Image 1 (cartoon, rainbow, N blue to C red):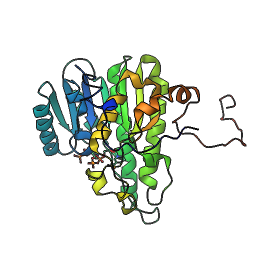
Image 2: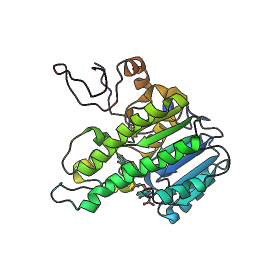
Image 3: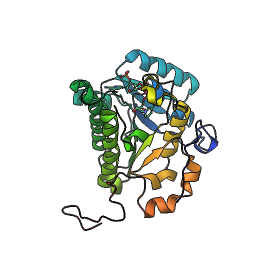
Image 4: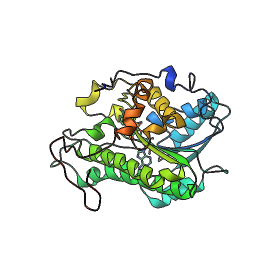
Amino acid sequence: MATIKRDQHDIYPFISAKGRLAGAATGKSILITGGGKGVGKVSPFALAGATKITITGREQKALDATKSEVEAQSPGATVTTVAADVTTEDAVSSIFAALPSGPPPDVLINNAGINADFSIADSDPATWWRDFEVNLKGTYLVTRAYLRLLDGKPGTIINVSTSISDAVLPNMSSYATSKHAVNRFTESVQLEYGAQGVRCLAFHPGGIASTGMGQRAPLQFRGSLLDTPELAAGTALYLSTPESSYLNGRLIFADWNLEEVEKLKDSIVKDNLLVSRVNWGPSISTEIVGLPPR
Ligand SMILES: NC(=O)c1ccc[n+]([C@@H]2O[C@H](COP(=O)([O-])OP(=O)(O)OC[C@H]3O[C@@H](n4cnc5c(N)ncnc54)[C@H](OP(=O)(O)O)[C@@H]3O)[C@@H](O)[C@H]2O)c1
């Protein structure tokens, strides 16, 4: 059994826009939800040569500030901002209506996310469900609009998930299950659209203390927020490259060293690893209705 250590806490040359991936996004168009703040505002895509970047979020002021920062840092990039709430269909339509002219974005990053923190009995139902609205419905609505825009053409979708999506932890029932559903949704997109050249991947961006979510993190996680936003951003850049196609439909952790993970490529593909399944173990066998035995 291979152990993949979670000891990569900052950007490293293998995934860096200033290192091995210099120029990896040359001429590309990128759409990032939640792109005005936190993880989403770090733009390795602009550094790696992307020319059109569209960022969305609800707060226009944050989008404007990020636009100024990114355009100052990468003069070859033009940033379009759209204030929109990803949970409503009309607002998502407004994002796609505002996209810069030309072909559809090469890469969509579904990064907008929130997390509630309470036990099930103590939870407020609207707040509990809001995690699903933003994390799952938002990802679904934006992905749906993107797939319609692609209209049979290839594209890349990167869904920001969390390591917690594969854990059962107290007070995380809305956040963890909404992100778990994002992982399965990622697999569904890959299954339905892979043949037209769509790549869809999910990734844990790391534990990042400096972002909004990091600052609001439940006490139990504060000591494990060791990663930089640049690690998350570089991972997204790597996942946007065809080199990472063996990870299509799968969940990846940013704090893994992806150069090491690439060495496991054959077994990841052959054994269909890094996907969400019920753990039947070696002693139980069953079949899913309508499908042949596993
Ligand atoms: N930080 C961590 O340690 C960590 C760990 C695991 C996973 N993540 C994931 O990383 C992603 C980014 O989180 P972050 O850490 O950068 O937190 P953050 O600073 O709070 O950023 C969240 C982003 O989502 C946007 N957003 C929230 N609700 C929205 C809505 N209804 N419509 C549109 N945009 C919305 C926010 O912009 P507005 O407020 O302007 O709308 C903001 O840009 C999330 O998906 C989160 O689950 C983070």
